[in-house]
Image 1 (cartoon, rainbow, N blue to C red):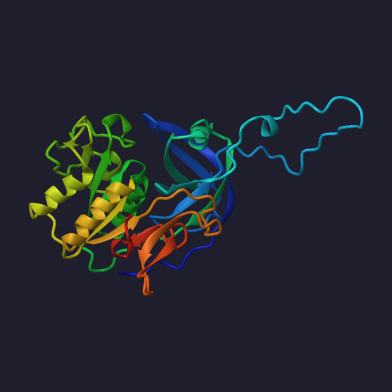
Image 2: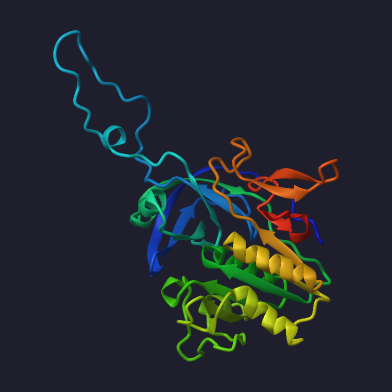
Length: 322
């Protein structure tokens, strides 16, 4: 495999909310505008986002309390309301240069207080952003076909990857799996229905713009193929429609899905790269909280790797699933 380009510099940036649009039940597209000094990014990298607007206040909050009299009554939100202190990690779903400014696309699902704060951000507000972080997906000159398999909130990096593959002249197919149709954070083309048999088509506009055909699966059968997206992929492969030589599979999403994709690919002789997902407090390797087991040349045969700095992208052969 061709090595990723050298890790670009990272930093903390003030990002202006350009738009914040609901895509489906629970999912939002947050577009953040940063300056021209934001480092170069690659598909597979992520950013850490503060889940509340920057209020511009600096320095300590001082309350006078004399020897006599009642204690002060705190009223400012940062003292009396529940706060989301840690940043949240989000894969980049895309990057665009508009009017001399860099615009980053982030697709997130509301699952707790932090993501609910992000969903409430309004146009013009400013948030603090740390990045870019992590490594990236790779391919080489011999790659003839890329297969992008995303599940739920693992779909965003596949959108960015589709764009980069298109720019590199590499053909691709996409497999998008969700629990039900109302949780699909993608736009459907009414003129091109999603195949119930799992056949790829230009049914998803975000992939179709890069010439990528997509198979959609839902667990409940409400849209496209009924069942797991990994099964839709292997049905297609086992029919002989995709061959291992010259093909690389990329996957991101729920760990159960990624494991099924990775193990199925390796059993069939396919190269596979996995973008692991973990809860991250820092995103830079300091907190040591986002570990996964990987193979190693030591007496145990394994070691703990940090998803944020050793990944998030790993060769599927490296990972020891638990």
